[in-house]
Amino acid sequence: MTPKAKRTKRRVVIDTSVLVAGISGFREPYRKGRNPSADLLHTWAEEDTLLWLYSEEILAEYKHVLRRLRVRPHVIGAVINLIRERAEKIEVRIHESLSPDPNDDPICQCAETGDADFLVTLNLKDFPQKALTAKVIKPGEIL
Image (cartoon, rainbow, N blue to C red; front, side, top):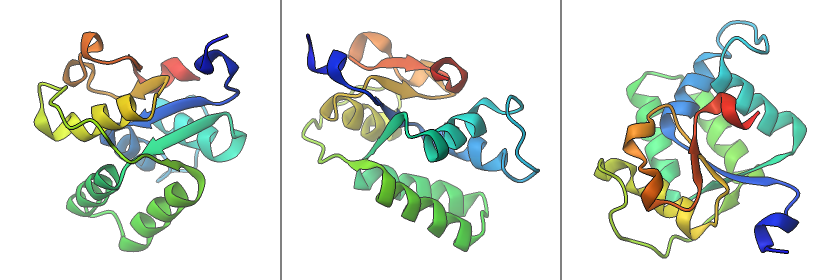
């Protein structure tokens, strides 16, 4: 049995696009099925079936994009703190370019170093499946 087969939690790296779309899905009262990204975040927070992988570079990207989108600072802090508490920090060892968009390399590198099962994104073209061992999927596909 391979190490991946023994796991009980699916190891996932969440692209910034999914985080942003998921947070926007919580602006209104949350209703399952309306926003796949919000459903993914809710599943991660409530069901403990997914193990979110992150690196410090990814957290910096999350914060930068959320600030640029004018998300309230206390919301950004709460999100980042929750990720730090409940997710697994990966010390990235791969520093090669894996994405056509250099800004997405930290996501790819974290997925590869962290032996992720899935890389979840809304921008499939930025994450070439042939360059990654993690399966590249959209948020609704993992649930």
